[in-house]
Length: 223
Image 1 (cartoon, helix red, strand yellow):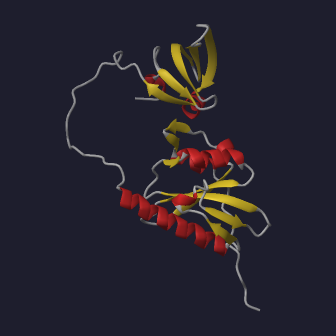
Image 2: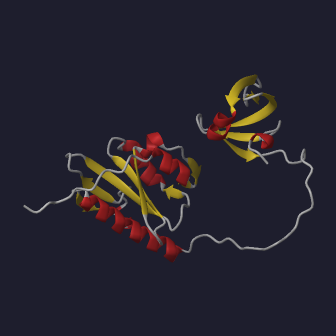
Image 3: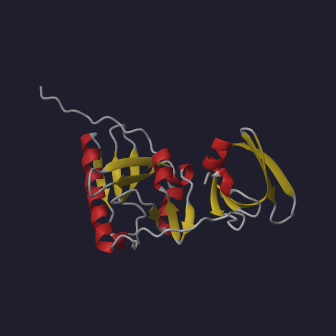
């Protein structure tokens, strides 16, 4: 089933650009252009807008589709699997690996870890204060995952990201249990599209898209 075929009148979409939910009233496809009509939740006015197929998938997330319009075939059961959340000790191990990887990478680039405030009781809203070789200071929040699961920022971390947009960086290390991959996002409050889930939940694809290019490591050549 294609992305477009799942968008039917009555479907609810999440608009990543505006951060709002949209209720689809009508769908009209004309070649490579799709016209969607949305109903305004307060005024009831109908807003008809054109989108390319690529823009649809990039901008909207389907929250609920109208499935009673589909004719479903027979269902065959081949296997059953129980999907469990990551155990707390596994998550803690991933976070420890992530912090170690960030320290190693920053040191290789000539940075100095000025202060480690990762202890929960400090409630700093970030983990490391880093002095870069260009003299800039970063407030670095480190997140680690064994795969590419979404990461969550607490309310305090998100508040600090909002208060220190010129200094706050989100460092996410994926695949901590195999070959760690580090993504660094400056100003996550301004650059990431986040959706509240108690705390603030951020998808891996959003982190990777917003990450800054990785700098080259500094090489110390003996003289």
